[in-house]
Image (cartoon, rainbow, N blue to C red; front, side, top):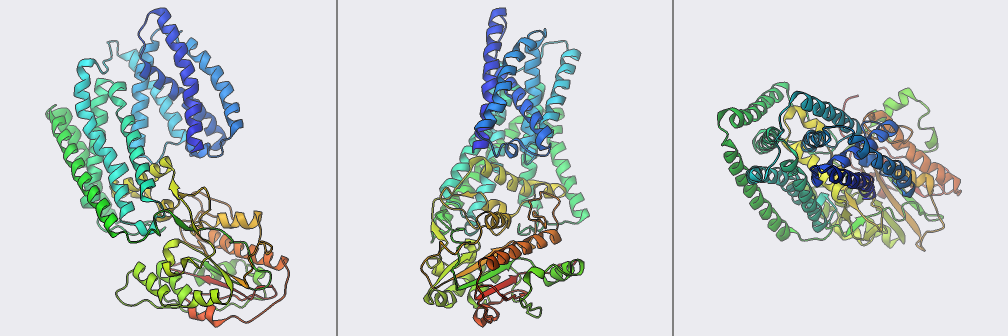
Length: 628
């Protein structure tokens, strides 16, 4: 939230100073003054100055929020002093231009059009896009003033009612569809996978909807008459086409588990033809057939908004009736508590590296024969067989040894497995402190109270992060097939919206937090409880896509690959083992069948400790079929 507040302050405060000076200069000359248009102009100017600076130092692909994630008190000082100096100078420089009012009003209309359409269509506004939009807006403004000698018409009191009647239903249709209905439906239909309280999530969507609604309606006051018709007709055309796409044209959509979906070229080509026909048809009817088509568009917007509102309320009611557990209501989590706390003598440690197929390891060993040298002294089992293809079945099986039965869904099998297994109970009864570090959705309710890292806390979600991410999900559903991968996301991105001030949740979709904690805090045997030993089950991302980690355990945005991430995840295990060795000890025991063969799921490679003090260390790799 601090990044959003910082951007707001750095943009609005200097803009307010400039607007005040502008007002005093205008009053002195006895000319017209529009508070909304003048303030909007100066906010965009200072936002562009900051964006330009950040583009030079942080890169053009980043958004403003990404650039200010680490904002602190010094940042305000470094930026605010020069910005306030500029805020005093700009109005005086602007007033040297004869057509300054005309320039401000026309510039506002162009930059608003670019930014608003970018918010409707894109995932976020990068520095390079915004600076480019500013440059193009300035050129278009100077060209418009030079070529068009007449008076440019904006919203008059007489025209205001007509503009409101046309714009408001269309904006409601867009905001309701993109920000509220589709994200809300996604959330309510997948409650077991999203550990955020319903109240926090829905409040974020409602507040975000209100802000987006107000911003998009700004065009009523800022756009010229010609721009107004084009802008709101474009929003209606894109929203209606996206609504039809999601309702009728998507076909079968795969789960967002990290892999990108692909469609055939004929399917994508036919789909874009339908889209083109819809969008062009809407513009043609409005501009060339009959000017009163806006009445039809208004009625359609109201009707579809009502349909979605009724559907959404039905989902809310059904979700409340079907909710029989508070496990996923943002009050509980599997945290990182005690993830580095071990017993001085007795420890059972299991690593699960997701998607890590034997072929990956063999490919790495062909390139780097000494890759597994840090695990010398361990035993490598390469002849284990796979049982289940998906993590939702594999993790419960690894922790219970109970097999799935025909007809069971994932949730039903999970509860059945933990209810009918005594594995965790046996470990607890043996006096061991049990920490299972995985996603909450993979662990049955019957054992949660027995885990040292199962905590009660209040989880919430950041409003703007939630709105941005869920709008991206909506656009994925609504986009034409050829553009869907531009809005590609994973379930993990939605789960990551959950925040807590008290605890850090264990996340399986990113191994870097574990790596950072391991390097900074290191393993510790001094803070352990008085139990007889520790059992630690670490579920890591391993070789799972998308690939955001290098082999040196560094975050990469778009250039990651499977082999680099596979090496990186294994190096985290190497570091863990190295720290175990540095703690001393020399107890070496045979692998217990209870913790290896009995609990195997998917393809498993078991690696046993050599000369370190823990009783058992197992490395389990979960895989899915793929070709190298």
